[in-house]
Image (cartoon, rainbow over all chains, first blue to last red; front, side, top):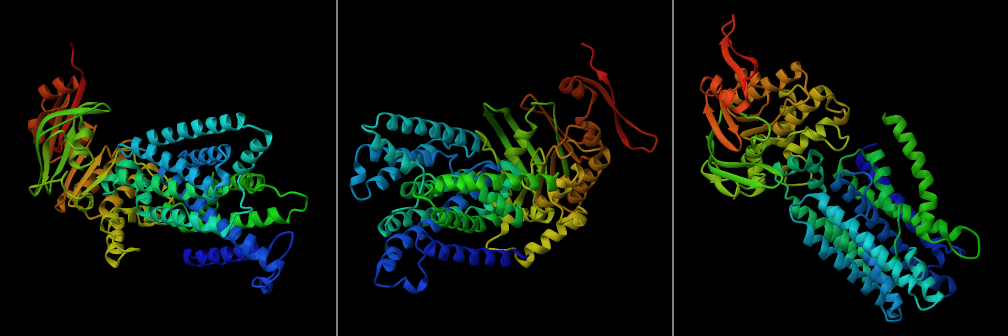
Length: 321
Length: 258
């Protein structure tokens, strides 16, 4: 299939997944009652709509960030957590819950964005020569440090309820978010996504290695700044609003590469769409699994995704070697 | 047209240093940079390509300092084939060659002119046959040709190649050398870092010999490849002779006795 037709198909699937996410749940809400003045209409406007919009945005952000980072590092194992932005944002959010700032409107969001902003500044400060190694080591150290501090905050939580609230938030979910949350996070995500989508040509040039890219006139330091800002803003905002949702950023670029080929610029937009489809579908399934509670999206994604990914990997390897 | 290096010095913790280099590279000539490991050959080439900024001195192209040029302008005029034949993703050869057009690309897709340059570069390097094959599946010789086609696709006036023959069999080495030679004959400035003295003697129009970060000798093969120079720089006992067909050859007898 031609790339354009494939992208149209992905767009169509994104719309379908979005509609599914609007309808699916313990109560199915069909389009006919979306504007209705009853419980169904209320569930749609207050619960389903923000949840679906968030799923769409977060999935797109994670898929795109994964594709950009894998292209930049020329390593298919990279994912949006390598920069330490997610961990720092999570630490900010956890700190806010610990201090009781979650009772204030946007308290958690603001603190998580502060954490993300801090990690962005730190990464920009250590990015001197445009080389990726020191920069990624910095990100990993940051990630470990933030993880340890997060564990520390949980361990000193005043009571089991606070600890469980923190852990719950950390696990990543799209439940109980308001349209107001969506509107707060959206500008950061849109800006981040726009920055990340602009990196295609430079990522292609990096196929030739750093010297090859530089000889083609690519400014690697500038690319690094764009990536730090793009991933920082977009992933920071998505963690701030939904906790840490793993796996999408790692797996989606692989799926997309299998159909679009490996050229980094070609997989950016499709990875964003693929991330949205996967997240929306997983979040709809989570709601449909019968039982008292709901499986957390972050957990569901890993539980469903891991075996599928392994299977794909095995088939891929067989074909390639 | 010349690429001129004046009083260039470069020092960095992770890179061989250069000191007080004065050299001139001319268009239409195949210049070979020689010198033992660590002499600063790749450092000099990276300075010529504008990838490294010398601490003192200048590299100028038509009297314009290349470190002051916008990177894209520089990239349109100077093409570099970096060391190591790096290719990171399994993209089709033709897509790899198309990367050479990046300094020229403005809009979203390739223009008619871009397409023409890509196919000309592929036919010059005889790589059309594997246009659709992923670069990761090519042999070393094929891959080097595709990477060279990538440089040619940018239609630079200068072609710089850092050890383009590494890991190639003799047949493929000769393919690459004659490709570079043809580019020089067509009027481009070709500068290559080579390790093989025999090839340098056979193919170079001009030689630049580095030793411990300094320019040791430059000029024609006869002036640079002398037994005294080779003994001093490489510590080898070697001399030039004319073979039965009248071609100048280098014969390396062994290490110089201490």
